[in-house]
Image (cartoon, rainbow, N blue to C red):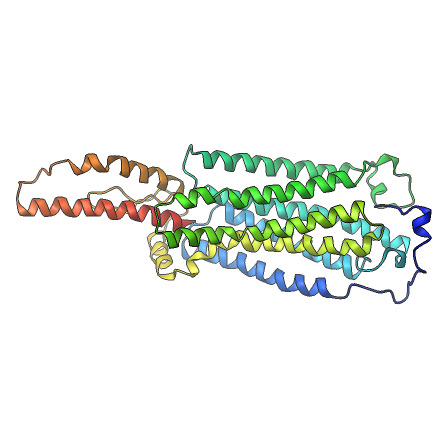
Length: 374
């Protein structure tokens, strides 16, 4: 927290500890509007994946963890602004109130790092559903995942060891020579947070564009994934206000209000945007019911088969779908030249034609099911 020099203190107005000017209830209204939407999205996601498709996976449960931390972030942010002085001018705050506000700030920063990191990890893990084995896309997902986890652990540790003893962080009148500067790590964290958000946003676009689907479906999938751009925007606003509060103003409680707004918005919007692709079955209920009835007795990735006469089965593991598509495509010309063992008659010719048509239908269905399974 920046301490104003004497010449700046001289410009502060007389403190008003009785009835200070506040930012009002805007933040609480916004957060209490977004939080239920985020929670509803997670509930719908679990309902679709567990009870409808019977295909829940790690990405679903990681998003549940993210939602828990997002709720905690929202609650602490509301408490900080409504109870601990983060919506009034710094000159209207007493020292004990400012110190309590610093404790709340540390709790909020911790919850934000946890919530935003688990949102990112959940989204990246969900990309494995559409990433072919040994593909460049899959390797990039692993690389970004490693970056997110490394940043998460680094900044969490830096937050809790920036002052030794830790109490120096919120003890305003203590000697702060035992603390590292607060500004640079927070700015780096906020900028890196936006950078990883952007990487996660653009990662699947090339793969989705190459899917052998009709153009409207490809565009629809890209729009669904494109909702991640909202997180990039929210993170950018937060990064700007982090820099402004730490380096441009001494009225940190009044201007810091903006950080609290975008902190809670980013975490809750991250959950919402991360769940939107998983809610796609609500737009195509007939296909969802068909898929759910197929897999009624098997969990995700269990490897159970759906037998089709004379053709390869449609795999249940989405990671394998791309590979099977390539196998079918590479063998298509060869299979077309195979002569039926049945006598050369109209019946045999009809049987061969129907099998060729079935192969085409299954190859097409693989791409459609792969896109839908996300």
